[in-house]
Length: 309
Length: 286
Image (cartoon, rainbow over all chains, first blue to last red):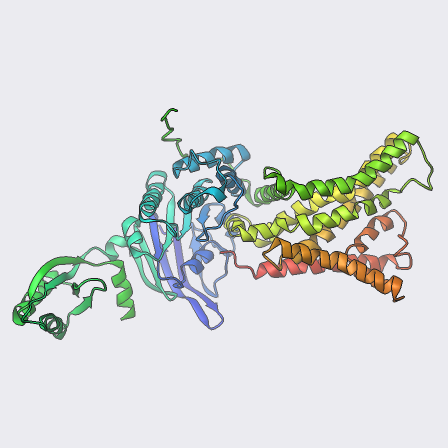
């Protein structure tokens, strides 16, 4: 059963269409809401939280209508905003406890759960420290703690790894995965980093300029073999060999994509074996040499490439 | 030092009841009261609240002390209940200008506003919690001295005669205090909603309340313009409420009828509340 579904969801800001007739279905688990900055992720989240009315279409979250049952819905969800500003002089434990109370917890229960949530995110020892003295990584964890402290059915996390270094990012992603796996809390994670979403999400909703690019289980959208990645070795007396290989492959109708940061390129098609044969023939004809050839896995960015082409 | 750590505190599901919107309003209101009074915060946050309480209650306490020490010093000298509201006007102004803006400005600045709206609170219920907190705290300052006088006079045998009369006096004192507080709160929060800087909000409130009060006084007393201009004074006009409730008129408003006073107070209330609601309707939550 879908925990979130939308039908024809549209948001119009004057002449700008922030969301364009989205039909989205999100299943239980960790869902990545992915897209570049300005793709409409935060707008979609604000609608799903009942904080903004759509211009057209409708949505249901946990079986509730965010427009008419917003307060009831928000009692059952947690939310961690992207903005990294928190009350400077407030101890983390007071901050989490207060928000748990606002989400309906009795005072004593809120105090206990605030402590538990801060231990859960690895800030047990630091829970009495003022938020203003904490690092960006610690603040991100506090935001996560307040989102889960009131035992929500679903949490929305807006760019939870923003401002984190690679190690902190890994730890945060692991923590988010554990929250879903160990405690049965569904997670909608907004991110502009495709690699994060590929790493921990079960489902993906990909947006590009307000339009739905893809929606479904990650395993179905990415991961299947889809062509090969090739790296050619330059040969001194064949300066045009690489260009000849690329031209030959394109001539045979293959989608050839050059990598930004290396001499490698992807040759994309449904049948990896057929692609490999074509690459072999093209390389042999041109006199180039293959440095590396591996099966290519379809990645989330291909969905965006496909949508734009 | 031990290296021992508690590794698993056992995050649990919660099966109990939740307090819903009413609980959220209560929690935010109480948190706001603590915040504006500086409770649980560093000493510097307690300075203005302490100043307000001191200047609000000192005159009332002084009069009561004199009444207790010297006994009944005559109706001519002894202030009436409604006059005690004038003693606390400066305290109310300091609170309205310097303390009350903290209630909403801080939330917008430090991200709490977005977090609050991700809970069962909506914009109207969030603002309701803030108004309850500010007006409730301000009521202690506006009605407190008069209530203190009420108790002091009663213990001295100078208060109302009989329980019914006592309840009637007490109710009017509380009603007047709450009415003044709600109007001052609306004006203060309305002005504070226009900026994210507390200092700017304070200046705006001072200019609006004290500035208009002085301007109308000059126009009427110095320039000889119509007395009705006093109704444009958002600081003085609400103070006419207790006087009218106790069947009196202050010297400044003696030629102005009760209906214009009521309408002017209603106007200030609606102007402040309207500005506040308009600003927050346009303020993005997420």
